[in-house]
Image 1 (cartoon, rainbow, N blue to C red):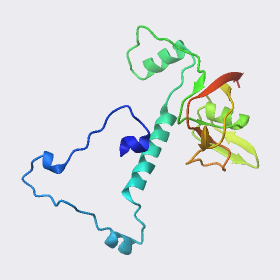
Image 2: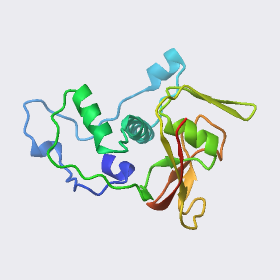
Image 3: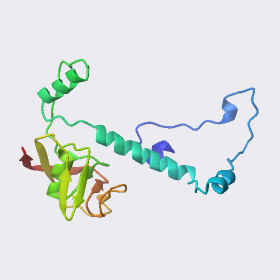
Image 4: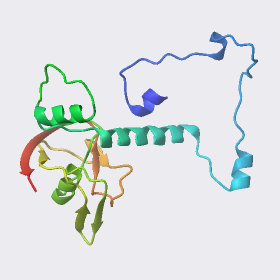
Length: 184
């Protein structure tokens, strides 16, 4: 299920059954957790487990994407490695980003893109003005360099804190072209 909901085919998952793992404890052939008491006592709705799994995977992916560091040059990477006590690699190749990978997020709004690119911990939009506390510059702005269509090539971000149409997620790799470098 995890591979299916994650959309990965990187590994082949083989099913296994309880009978394949002998145990002194007798297990019922079919059992379902009764959630009626927690629902009635606490008045909560317990989602179906596959819905919770999908939400968990989505949250993990989004958290991982937020934690990914993008290094513009070898010196920046070396500094980060030193600061975090990692050994320095002997050979590093840096490639200019020419595509937005499947599952990555983007916005068509320049001010919001600059805010995202400056690595903020907070972004807000009030009366059309973008405010943020990002401090990482330069910010590299890219434009998608091919024809794309909503739902076929990208979707509205499923967990965006912004209004629909402000933030999107790619459904496939998309070609990019560098259009500006912001050195605020």
